Length: 196
Length: 168
Image (cartoon, rainbow over all chains, first blue to last red; front, side):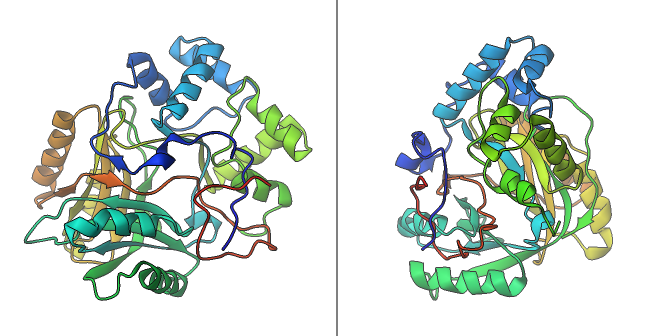
């Protein structure tokens, strides 16, 4: 077992209490929140008073920018706020989306089990699309190599009791685009292919 | 990026979900790291230029503002670059990867509402000439605390993490 070190551990994390059923309520945000989130979709400016700078761009005061972000974080709309890294550039060159066909009654239990491994960065239930696609449980595994990913997968399968369940491992090849989601902003598209 | 300095490692690892929401956040980081604010800003800018840092900012929980979906297409290899470029051309698309499968192009699209999202998927299908399968999120099991990079070599990479982060 490893211990995650964090200086933020005293803050409550609302999402921890339960898995998130979708679709989630959208009542926690207003137009100003959405304008604010759109303004920082590609990141905070790297200047000393960055929230004041965001405030200037959006017509909101610095204190209100900070208060709104704190509230959005508390409400779980912002699931985390901080440095967003690119795994590939940091030596985690292999990533696989692993998908399972799990009996509907077991998805939640198995999903929660998978989600606790530190090499998992996403773990979702999604709908099947029969006949083309039978899988309903997805997770993303990052590792330094294919072997690393596959050995972590094997470990996880054994720990969570997924042996024998139909699954597929979709390693990534090329990354054509990777950036923060843009829900509202109107800006030119970016992105070019790079090897993964 | 390899051969990272101790400052780079700490900036990459220690503030993924513990970034101060205060008027001078980089000065706060500098105080915790024992360096100057200018050094923090310059280092983050360098990490961003190198692609190691995507951004300093918010990771928004899916489907709380707007809607999003994961979509996939089966594209012949010879046509993949054309189709990938067309998909990339949409501001609504934020991730787009080739994967090892018959369904070989996987992308995430986000929009203010379900109607616009469907319109984007329909347009992509029509322009590319391939079926687009959409797999919207039904339930999220992962608690996003960022990605532990294990630069502290005494903290060997393990198999399980604690769900409740431990103060040290």
